[in-house]
Image (cartoon, rainbow, N blue to C red; front, side, top):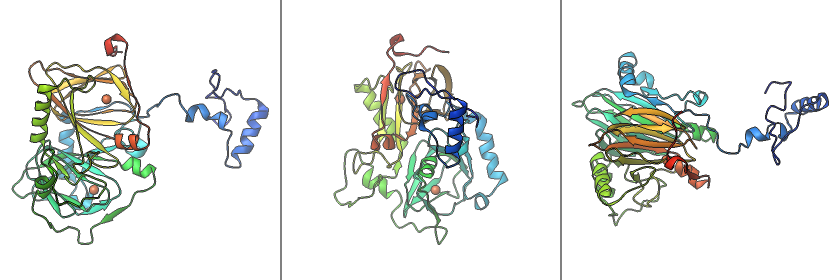
Length: 374
Ligand SMILES: [Fe+2]
Ligand SMILES: [Fe+2]
């Protein structure tokens, strides 16, 4: 709104603000502005939209285009200089807060064999999804986890964590996912570097998988009371096997195909208080029905190729591509292969939406539940 116009958001609907400007009213609004105030009816329709209007736009970040640039960062800057060598995903509608979509941040990080980043902690909750390479590991509060492609690992709010690649490994690239924009919007972010720069591994390697990674079996002695998953690492092989088993006996969801949510095994709740994650399988040729819901989603194609239709536009994707679905955008997914399944990893802010009672979902009813391409 320009300074001399105050009626740009008028709506000719009963119950909505509909006040035309006049010289007398403009003078009044200017007097209010001089006192750091304003008349609500000049902005009410803008700040209280009828339905969510995401500032984010759907984007596909193609791995084939990005990979070379990500690897180049390893030649241009050292981990010591950069802290973390990451190429972040910058949604054109959310550049002001470095978000990939909504209130979620994401980036691609690269590490070479023998590199070890310094340990730190922050209020932001984070996850990593391994894209390529051998020998990656993460240490979280003394627990060391070895990581392979399509594994994902948590570094929750307040945990000391550091990442590295073993000397005999290969260059590794992974996707980071964090709630940075959300926590910053809440003005609640703290950051600390570990006093020794690196932490000591105080538990047997991969101990959390041994204790907590057994399907439907909970360790008797745990005492776990923290608000995030004690498992930390979720491996690809058992996840994929679980999806295939589930697909043999269930039709799954009309909107998501066969979808399994990663959960905190101690509670059955989301992996972290601010970020949820899941892996879904689209059967050969599957075309899901369209729906929309609140909550922002970032997908990574863990396997296969296909496309998604988001708000009427087709976005093609193939293995390792990343794409986003903004809150309340209508979406449906298609596996283009007629003989192989496709798998999508995703993370989202649904735990926040649900905790704040803001989750809402709606199916598309017209056109047999599918969007018409625009
Ligand atoms: Fe971190
Ligand atoms: Fe959805």
